[in-house]
Length: 331
Ligand SMILES: O=CC(=O)O
Image 1: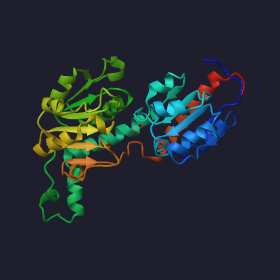
Image 2 (image 1 turned 180 degrees about the vertical axis):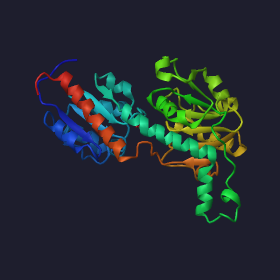
Image 3 (image 1 turned 60 degrees about the vertical axis):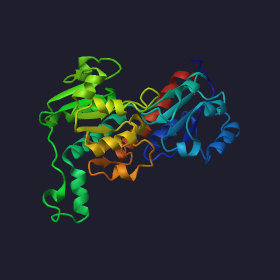
């Protein structure tokens, strides 16, 4: 990395809700410029004029509405001065990393602050899906209790007793899910990952092959990043290998599951219940899927809490400060 003596200029892409203090701290060492471009075309134009000397970019998940995806086309419009991009989220699915790293631009994401809140969401979805709480709630709201009988007519649920939890993707979020489930009384925890992790990281859970994970899980948590290898990873072939009545929970990304196929599996009962925070074409969610009684769905709320957003936003600034402190000799 080459060092520089010029004052860094950080482009703030997307709204900051809670981390104003942290941004003020950054403003002591860098010039901060708020991005006002309202669409991709304007953004590309502004990169040649207003933002032609920016050195770092901080972007939020929502800012995709202003700029579109961070892809090769966008990379080709960035001024040579850009050295790092800090993304306010865990998933890299809005960013094609290679075109940026090929230009020597460092990309960073948010890891730890996302893990607990996302895992909490997964646990909520799991408990609700196993016990049909959503169906009971909906029937109550529709005034069908007691007319439809006990529990408003909701189907009998299942307890963790004797059940195997399977975690596909044992990164920070996968591990946080396992840790938060430990007190609920499941029988066994298994996981599949690109490689087996140390026991220190995964204590209490057993590494199994992908096929074994599908075959043995009573509740399957999807916790892999979306990329070309994981797009539609959970397809007809994968469902065929699962247990009858498996509960599937997705807090990763919608397109990891073939949603059309999932609908068929839910209708047939092969998938007993589905809990999801993410959808293949979100924010479009097929009504026929969301309205199934054995589906509990959320509109991508994994980190939708003030504490989580504050921690994510602060982490983004930390990433910029870390870059600046190593790349600049005097600021
Ligand atoms: O979905 C949320 C994230 O990627 O952080």
